[in-house]
Structures are given as structure tokens and as C-alpha cells.
Length: 245
Image (cartoon, rainbow, N blue to C red; front, side, top):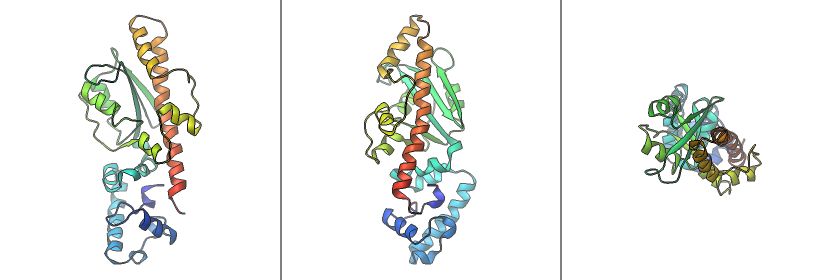
């Protein structure tokens, strides 16, 4: 579902009203006329559509992020894929003030990049990597990845953010990323490696063990690329569940 199929960003329009609009055959902004709803609410929807077209033309993700309820912001992903950045970090522990970020992988517009501590993982490179990211996609990134990076580097990641952990819960999918991947049928090249192994691999890299860093980077990159696959799947399922067309 794209934002042009959505009316829920309007004051006074909830899930029930939006579904009623769709059931009348009005499933796109182009099909809407105020008489479909009537009264001031119909006028508000028409005004929202007029502004929405202008905002869509300039790819203003923030406008729709602010207009849509938090549980409906998954719709942004299907509208702004080129501005979407999937990312995942690995660390030496869970305390953002005591532990170190070891790798950061980012996937956007088909390209994947990994920054490594002690090499190219710097504040300047992170700012550059996120420069064109108008929509962030993570799994538990609101509570972990974003605050960890902001606490350890001079980066501002306060922008529209689709945290798939919460999106998955809307479909009854719970647990960590690996569990959810299994539940929706996403396979991994190295299913035997976990977050704990990522800490071990970094320590082994520091000790000079050949191949440890390569394995860690591969694991981190797979986490990140799989976020795109997961986002595609869960937004498709929500689309099938919610949208009437």
C-alpha cells in the first residue's frame, strides 16, 4: 500500500472510516470526492490529498510520518524505497556507555556498505552514509542501534524510522530477528552464528585470528540485507490484511 491509497492521515479518519471509503471503491486519492464522506471530514480529506500530492512530489517522508499513526507508518516503506536505509550494528555488549560499536552495515538502493571500528567507522563516515536516508528501517533499532550510535558518535538519527520489531508484532510475530526470520521463511547462509558469536568474533579479530573479521562482517551484512526481505514480507502481509481493493 502506498500513501496515495491512504486516508488515515486525516484528523477524524480512523481504520473504520478508511475501510468504509475503500469499500465504496475509492482506493486512491484520484478517486476521492468530498461527497464520499461528506461534511467537514470530506473537506479535510480533500485538503490532505491536495497537500499530500505536493509533499509526495518532493519525497517529503517526514510529512507522512507525522500524519500517519505510528502503527500505519509501514505504508511509507512501499512509497519511498529509494530513500530507505536498512541498517544494523554489532557491539561488544549491551551498554551504550561502556561498550564499543564494532561494525555498522547499511543497505540502501541495492548497495550494502560495512564500516569497521579501527578502520573506517567514524562519525564523518556515518554522517555521510546516512545523508540520503530519509527513512530508517531496523529491528529493535529504536531502543538499541540508534541510541548506541548517537551515544558513541556525533550523528543525529532523529528521522522517520520503521522499527520492524513493532511492525512484526502487528502480525503476531514475536521474538528476536532470527526467530522472526524463521517464522516467515527467510533462510540464512550461517544460521549457526548469533549475536554472542559476534562479540566473540570481534575479540578473536583483536587477537589476530585470521578470518574472524570477515565472518563478523558477513554476519552483520546478512542481518542488514535480511531486513529488506523482512520488510517486503511483513508489509505485504499487512497490505493483504488491511487494504480493500
